Image (cartoon, rainbow, N blue to C red; front, side, top):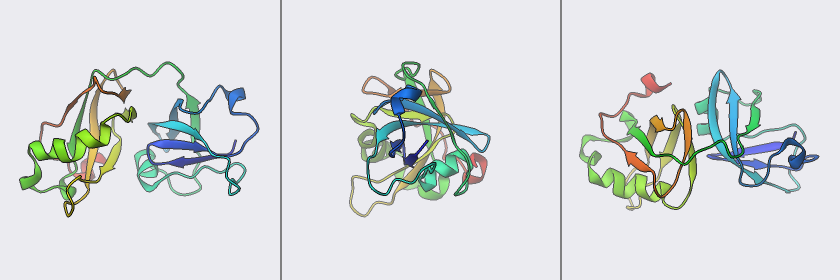
Amino acid sequence: MDRQFCWREASWRRWASPTAMGIAHGDVLLLTGGGRKTVAVAHLDESDQAQSGTARLSTIMRRNLHLDINDDVTVTSLGDDVSNGKFIRVLPIDDTVDEVRIDENLFDNYLRPYFAGAFRPVHVGDLFLVTSLVDGDPDVEFVVVETDPKPYCVVGPKTDIFYNGPPMSRQDVL
């Protein structure tokens, strides 16, 4: 199977038949590797740079799965088994945010725009990096600490996003 994976999305490269595996463009996939799991969205990639049997994951996806380059990844289509989330709870990583930024601006400048209209799949334990809407503000990394339903869901417009609690230490997350 030829695959290329990108941050929060799995981009499919040329391969025999994605439909033979029951996977189509836009499907939510469960990625397993390194003793961990995460979720992504499938996207078909017909580029000339496709390499047979190769999956490329972003740095953050590899970190979520505890993988190095050239490690194996198992891909499973979740089909309709992924529910829209009732709520998720995320916390910032302490070395990416200072005390001044832990307020309403954290939601308005980071979380709301990141999730708005995107229908992003998340898995408990996932890290994700968000760029601020305000020029000059630093990027903030968050960890998903809870989802309802568990252990993964799709964040949609009706999903409540909670971010209460102290920032988490990167060492505690990894």
